[in-house]
Amino acid sequence: MSAKTFSVHMKLLENYLFEVDFGEFGNIMTDEPPPLGDGEGPNPSAMLAASVANCMSASLLFALRKYKNDPGELSASVTGTVDRVEKYLRVTQLNVEITLGRGQSELPDIGKAMEQFESFCVVTQSVRHGVPVSVVVKDSAGDTIVV
Image 1: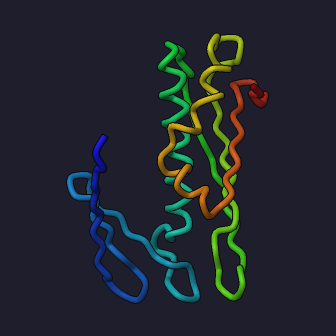
Image 2: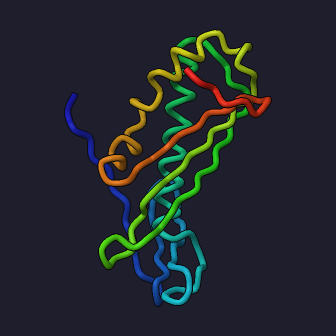
């Protein structure tokens, strides 16, 4: 497979407020929180966290569907930690929790999907080279799915 490229364009509007242009998918605003910016949009750390959680969720969905399993409603939350490393602020941890809309017993191939889904996630596997990422998957009853 040959390498694929993608582009996102940004423009500074004022202070630390940027317009991010995703082309055919529209624009969003990003901003740094006070005291640098005015917090008028998600900051880059939140965008990174959202990218990881979204990619992990899509990868789990792909793995489940590969085995003809329907997870029902799927939701995710992600918590990140920013701390000083040497003298600079860095994202030092991302914790993703994915919740499925069905119980484990309704997903006969959940074990197979769980064993491989993280490998499908382009973003997380790239980010993990510098930031630890933990992932927990829960079923509709709130039980953690363990392989």
